[in-house]
Image 1 (cartoon, rainbow, N blue to C red):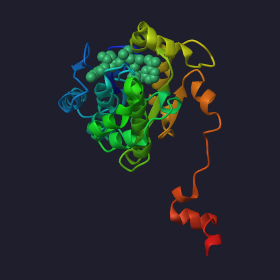
Image 2: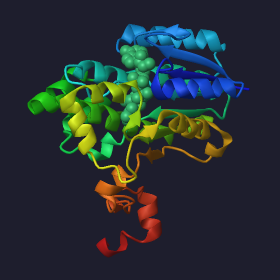
Image 3: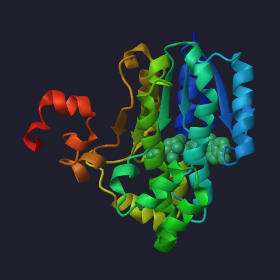
Image 4: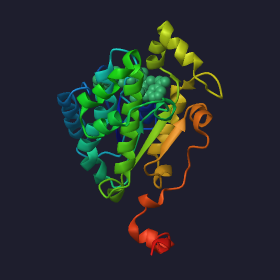
Length: 283
Ligand code: NAD
């Protein structure tokens, strides 16, 4: 049986994942701002450091995997918290936990992204770049012009940035090379306290309800947790840097033809360009 860190273990999808892991006989080190083995505020650098230290101590420095589910929804007025928890609460914690994950040589990590990554228009590239560069103030300045919509935009930016961080790192020697499988689960609207808070606000509720979901209704947190457990299992040995959408079809509805797309030639390593013969016409 394994030892897993689960952030956001007190509520919603993180709670369901923690319960299912425990029911399967695993040890869970929950991290949350409330009701968890390790109570820590992932919106601050000190809180993230305390969370990482606690997790390393409780696990004896050996982890079989992690679920990064702590996060905030796109609620107005919480822009800074959204960026801090949704991006840095994942990236800083995973960076600190990496040596413990590497020790088991086949650890699995599931980061909870969102389908807002592909269904929110106009997210400024500057905001995403700023988060990836670790500059939260710059990211917040980049979304200011959206006024009352800036919470939705920084939310999408935080989830795009964290998904990109996962994909960039998943394939490297420090992660894939030491047996860590790093992947993203991207949910759509799932019935949790986070969504309930949005639905309790008439204006937010209107936009949630107007959003197209081809299969209808909202997703079930327990079913999303089943996906997480699958992505933590041996079934994910060959899964690396993937973003799995479980969103009732909204991503496909908006972007059926946007992906998969062929890799641009200028993204290929030079030896491959030569090997495949793409460079010949230039000679
Ligand atoms: P939830 O509100 O039920 O659970 C989130 C958990 O994160 C809570 O236990 C909360 O205490 C914890 N948390 C919040 N701020 C924290 C902080 N500063 N430090 C430590 N813990 C903190 O929400 P959920 O719907 O289960 O969301 C889980 C993840 O899924 C989040 O990252 C969210 O952005 C993402 N998501 C949710 C939906 C949805 O519709 N519910 C859709 C897409 C993505």
